[in-house]
Length: 182
Image (cartoon, rainbow, N blue to C red; front, side, top):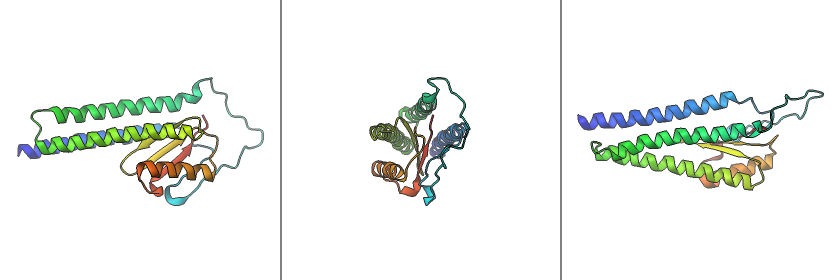
């Protein structure tokens, strides 16, 4: 009976962590204005902007606001993942945790740290490809990439898709690539 309760507690904690990540990610995406241009690999559909519309000017943003999305997103991602890892470490190091739950928590801890490592590596590689900035979010079902760019060409999207697929081993249908000009 105690084993079942511990196991249920472990899964409850894991589910809460993933739900909080999904909520965080959804809130961050909802706060973004939709990109004017960009392409998406999921489902094979592509979306391209039509260029500038005559005479309309975009509102002026204060200097430094350009990097805010990317910096804030990384900081929030690190905070949420840190909390997730702390909770898993507590389960692993708790002497009252049964061995099976401890092993499951340890495996999840390794997955989270590997995802963080891949996200940071992908962001660095994307910048090395000539993009000004990028943020990457890896979850079990999808990899979402947001690059700082006015628009993305088909070759850039293909290049990014190949990069993500090679590093994460996910199918192209599970990769979403967006651009965010500022």
